[in-house]
Length: 423
Ligand SMILES: Cc1ncc(COP(=O)(O)O)c(C=O)c1O
Image (tube, rainbow, N blue to C red; front, side, top):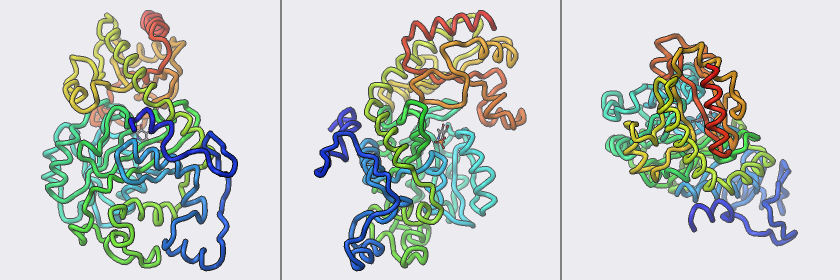
């Protein structure tokens, strides 16, 4: 099946008891065991089935199967937020004393997790320039567990050369983790491009309507965790946290996602509510249509801004003037999603006036909604950063970020025109 069909049908057909056509919300904490043996078999992972909704739920299973197939992976794990997905993706294989390599232009929440929380828990994060994958070679050592990057960065809106990253990471026997939130599996399939693990914030384009927070990890099933059993000892040695199971033996190619579910999720509990899953599934059904419109509208907005006298610069990887355009054409089907940033003449003051004058664009800090959104990172998401940190994060004071929605383009351009006049 193609993505448009998978997004609507995969993982569910009217269930036999009620024939419900929409995926039911299984609003239950627990699942009955047929007898004690059945319960024991479920806990031993000797038979498949549901135990407790902290670690699995049939509504979530539909979403997981749909996302896994859309991304070209073998299995997925749905979680309470994108941040939970990022945290668990790392904790599944890394512990105190280990390090990871990550690009420095990450989503602010991820950067905070990597620059502050993980180091305070003993996991060191070594940052590199996203345009310089060769820097991996200078930083990798025997305790490096993975390389982490965003396919399209938020808010820097840089585009990653995923095959180049995958090639270098794999030379050292290290998996590549890609946050594919801004591109979504409709524009790019990081696994086909060489990534091993994909992370999605479902809060953004996949849910698409600004109503539910969610996240997911998708396992390609392709990485050979056994090849270096010392580096990936968490997957290759008996785990006292879960019945001394050896994941590479029990789950074989699904070792990684198996451990993500039965250790980080099981033990720390950031589970996705099936009610949120239901809403995210509604959004997912129209994701392919929306990604086309987001990309089309954003390109038109970027071209409009590029030709406007009050605009200093525009950063949109779909523009022919962007240094990332060739990557967008090669790996993202020529579509660059809905995020763009620009610098307004007159700096932070003009930026604030512009934002305040907008009518069709909502002022908030989110991306990927059907509605158009505007934000001034220097006074909101990035306000704690000093000048140097702002520069490193690719955020200047005059930068305005737009998440272009799927409204009619004429209305958006009209709104931008009057707001630029007022600024
Ligand atoms: C690229 C990216 N990854 C991850 C996240 C975190 O997702 P969530 O807000 O669902 O925790 C965000 C949030 O903005 C994001 O933009």
